[in-house]
Amino acid sequence: MLEIFIFATLNGLVTGLLLFMLASGLTLIFSMMGVLNFAHASFYMLGAYFAYSVSLYFGFWMGLIFAPLIVGVLGAVVERYGLRRVHQSGHVAELVFTFGLAFLIEEAVQFFWGPDTKNYQAPDILDFPLFTLFGQEFSAYRGFMIGISLSIFITLYHILTRSRIGIIIQAAITHPNTVANLGHNVPLIFMGVFGVGTALAGLAGVIAGPVLTTFPGMSIALGSIVFVIVVIGGLGSLAGAFIASLLIGLLQSYAIASDVGMPELLNLLGLEFERSHPLNDLWTLNLPRIAPILPFLLLVLVLIFRPTGLLGKREE
Amino acid sequence: MLEVNDLHAYYGKSHILQGVNFNVQEGEIVSLLGRNGVGRSTTVKTIMGEVAPVGSIKFKGEEIAGKNSFEIAHLGLGYVPENRDIFPTLTVQQNLVLGMKSNKSQGRWDIEEMFRMFPNLGERAEVNGGVLSGGEQQMLCMCRTLMGDPDIIMIDEPTEGLAPKIVEQVALLLQEIASRGVAILLVEQKLSIALKISHRLYVMGHGKVVYEGTPDSLLQADDVRAEWLEV
Image 1 (cartoon, one colour):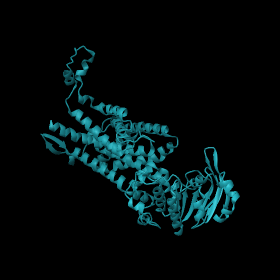
Image 2 (cartoon, chains in turn red, brown):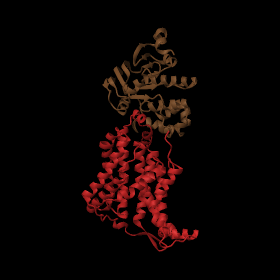
Image 3 (tube, one colour):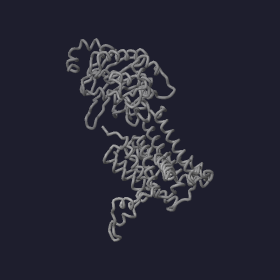
Image 4 (cartoon, chains in turn red, yellow):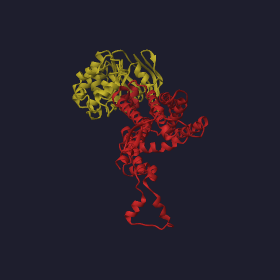
């Protein structure tokens, strides 16, 4: 029981921190522009594909460095020449633009890399068990994923709260005109934040690609959950996104690791069905099978009982 | 230093500024007076690039009409808005740091000096700006703009809603600013502070300048005060 709990916690942390890397960029961009970037998860997918291509020639580590940079520059270009122009036409136009961009990136990925799954592998140097507990191994690559995600979180937190540029970003999010009047180039700041946000998504793709497989549907697989996290955490709240990411990562991980199912519950209630009964399928349901819908269930609960999200603020 | 010629501005179809002309010379304190709604705040917002200008705005001989706000601020124009707009979730110190245009520039002002001039702000350096009193917020907002070392500072209604004692402090700060060679364009509705500290003043009405003179000449112009200023 203890081993299941420990490994479920570690795996939940890996997933949660990975989700945070995506959600942090998305929530920062939302704070600035007031619009959800539907193409955010597509930049995550691009990160994985760019890293795969770079790794074919120069190895995994070069991919780790260059793929997020390429994705970040691409994101900045999208903001500068796409979103900034569309912004003048209002939020609906921006939503439609990012929605279309998501489709465009998915089609482009299939066009350039093909529809099949890519053989993007973790580096050999991390192909060993980091530790063995209760006879079960925890891979070094997963430990690396935790390490890199935590370092990104700590760096991001320090930059945003301690550095001058972080203070400018915080102020520009709420008072862009005042910040511009003080002599700061707000459009450049917005472009930079958009670029960093997409680079973080790209980095998440680079480190997730070898574990969650690199295929054209990977943005859809994770994209919806990232939106759920941003809403549960509270739109625009970085701390909320962090809590919600870990919550969902752990929730899913515990659900997958558990062997609790409907039979136990139905037996407890003393219910029994004939094989031909329409509700007989309930017997086959268990927690691991419903794990994928748990984030959405949590989203519904949060929207009912706390519509602003865990740490979100109501607009005045 | 600042020359505004035939300046027009629009909010939608409303023609707010209808040919404003005035100038501010180096080291001068100039007041822009008038009743509510005559276009005083719109004038400074238009100079700062927040409202699209039609006409000519020259600063140190360079045409700035049509430039972005941050470019105008970099040329040496400082602006303290009417609503103060301090950053409520940032500390007093962080608010001041934001006023600096770069990490290195010190200019005529530094944070320690601001805290010496306003011990209240110094004592609350690590307190969030949102919890300061109205007077402290006004001082913070003016100090923040000064941290960018402007050559001219445009201040919109700095005494609005402040207690008489704080108004005196604001007047002292304005005179201190001017004594360091920084020109001031003071946008005011109240006559008292403007008459006390201004070198020259303009009165606005119906979107244009309707009177130009000195505090003494305005004091003698009963008809101007009655028609354009007194409520």
